[in-house]
Amino acid sequence: MNRFEVLETIGMINNEKLDIRTITMGISLFDCADENPVRACEKIYNKIVSKAKDLVRVGEDIENTYGIPIVNKRVSVTPISLVAAASKTDNYTIFAEALDRAAKETGINFIGGFTSLVQKGFLNADRILFNSIAQALSTTERVCASVNVASTQAGINMDAVREMGQIIVETAQLTKDRNAIGCAKLVVFANAVNDNPFMAGAFLGVGEAETVINVGVSGPGVVKAALEEYKGADFETIAEVIKKTAFKITRVGQLVAKEAARRLNTNFGIVDLSLAPTPSIGDSVAHILEEMGVEKCGAPGTTAALMMLNDAVKKGGVMASSSVGGLSGAFIPVSEDLGMIEAVEAGALTLEKLEAMTAVCSVGLDMIAIPGDTTAETISGIMADEMAIGVVNNKTTATRLIPVPGKGVGDFVEFGGLLGRAPIMSVNKFSCNTFISRGGRIPAPLHSLKN
Image (cartoon, rainbow, N blue to C red):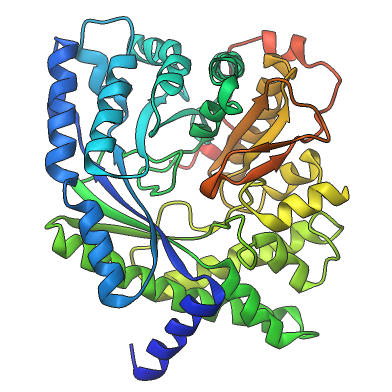
């Protein structure tokens, strides 16, 4: 970086909320498998503590050295369904509790990897993990769970979709005294990626190194500030502005990622350039779309604006680093984005419009609070629609749906911190019970045959 770039970056940090949203250390747990579940959990705890003991300190040291805020320090691990398969037990909550203890010991914010990959079918270990999710999320604080139920190559496992609707309802009930917070730590994926640093869907995929550092960068405020100088400009111009801005943000992320990997004596993985918003003023993806010219996020034109934003962010990022990965794009989590919350309150943004927007952005229906009396079948139906978007478009999509017991449309629910606050959104009242009860697997689309 030259002197001008350094000064510009300082301005982004001080005035436009540029930050490193997370440094996430991936840790392989394959060598922790053991027939005895207690021994396996002891190995898991010891390995995580050994590998990640300096993660928080290093993150803070880099913050002090470069003046770049690093909001979260996290760990992702090998999907527990793969590690725990060797253990003779019918409940994997013990593994979640080991992960939680390790997270608290190392001081990290969250640990991801209570995960199952069932896009084509269930192993016995997947069944056990499914049956353990609700209890595991209700008895731990920092553990995040994820399930991949669909892929472009395999289609949609509708048995898994049906069961996940039931699990989400159960998790909401078990954490109803905390506004169903367990559901905020549970993601259902299509085409989940192996190197995602963002929670709650992070896990270390098969084929990754023993340990690796993946960094997630965020800068909605930086992009909005850049566009404010180009009011009335045509779309080619603002696409170039977004690309150049994303390039600068990614350079900052790569600097931090490589330095963290060096200091922790591990591998540098990827920079995930995702415009991940927060509830803070000036840190909203929705406000970027409104800066482009839609009166409120959700108005006609919103999906087109989001498509251009997402594409320009990716193009700028890949020019800045040969190691861009993860999800990389624009996130639209309702509770974590002040502009999204305002749009829902104004009646401009509905669940159906959000679903349309997920066809062109990163991830999917994220951090959406819905009435507590929403049925498991309806939740599964919403989930199936979102999985279909990911499968057909060969992209990652996901749902993080939160049915909040005792809450209805017009109410708000407070989660706190980066999870923010969410308006309860209306859900279509017509039934999909017969559709969900069919079960089986929706076959992969024709264009999956690429060999």
